[in-house]
Amino acid sequence: MSQEKQQTTTPLILGITGASGLIYAVRALKFLLEADYTIELVASKSTYMVWQAEQKIRMPPEPDQQEEFWRQQAGVSHGGKLTCHRWGDIGATIASGSFRTLGMVIMPCSMSTVAKIATGLSSDLIERAADVQLKEGRPLVIVPRETPFSLIHLRNLTTLAEVGVRIVPANPAWYHNPQTIEDLVDFVVARTLDQLSIDCIPINRWQGY
Image (tube, rainbow, N blue to C red; front, top):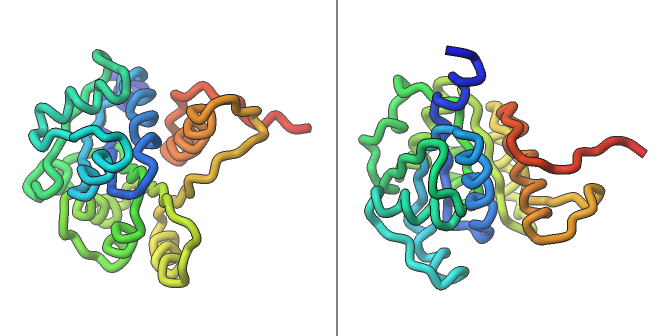
């Protein structure tokens, strides 16, 4: 098996929490599935409420129904492999270090999730999977969507950075001449996946003056 093929077949965990900005997760999922990546997805309990509040859409609770739901949101009916997990299923594959992954992205990442990971708490599958990435020395990338940061937030983020977590705030750039909201979102998603050496999003990168 080629290295490139192995990269797309080894699962990448996508954690989605109840922070505002679920469009970041949707756009990430779109490009990853289109590039034939294997995705293990888990949405936190609060994500259900945020979807209802922001999109007026009810996210189904059953994992098999969630797969169809997320593919519909991403606009990718075929391509890649998507497996969804219940937020409280701590017996899932991704809860074990023996289940090999490319790493994990939490996008968007609530400050509550940041705090729990920073203190080693594993009250749901997202937190447990993140803890597994840390103990196994695998990449963990978080996209906090909060402003302003309190001192508590900054201390928790510093704790994560000190153990190797890559932190990519949802701060878009303008030098690539964005024309749509999707352009702004895709820049953040691309910079997030850059942390895992995944290049599957067509953005205008900085070319210098």
